[in-house]
Image (tube, rainbow over all chains, first blue to last red; front, side, top):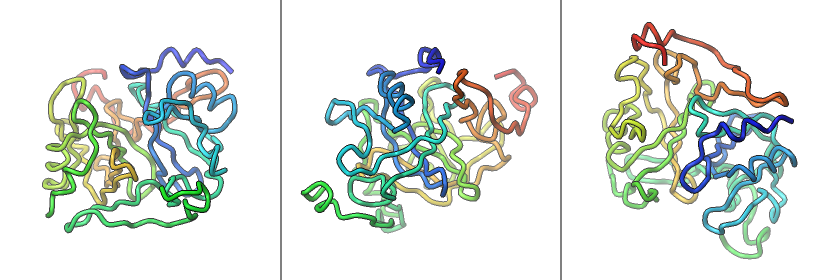
Length: 131
Length: 131
């Protein structure tokens, strides 16, 4: 693997680049998280999405607790090379720590936000606590 | 329209929130850009995606030059309320200023990045200059 492209990408002031994860089969957008150079390299080497958690300030191989790993089928970058799009197989069928299939379950309506998504697992059972 | 949700969203230190634009018909992820509270409100009021351009430091109703506006069909927010997903009708059939249908035309291969996308228009003709 030629990793020289890693130096061409545009990272923000914190060395991060946003990453959109899309279900390769359904096309559903599942989540947006952040990578840095090392986590992107690790994602490729493991073939599993590995992010940098801004809240926990640590590397985070998605699914390391829940088992809901994201197998990478394709990686793309945008025109400005400042965003990653990964097309993945979402193991366990859910990307969100709340147990929802997609993180984007808050739908805007004229009355405000309503929950509109598919619940796949119980976070209490998977993480041992309510998320 | 109840706009009180705008105060619940989490903006970054610059008041921005990333926005993923997805073709509502095909499911293709077309681009990622940034909104702020005012541009998100304007997007809803106009029903056209309006971003904050970080490079030009100005509001930017997508398609104002090219005519390739993005009609919003659905707006969603993620679990943490720090990312927007808009499902849109991409007028003109191309989201990217390079004339490509999607901005994500740089595909990663073992040899590095290769251009892999559909060219819809000539940027020289539309903008009067090469992008």
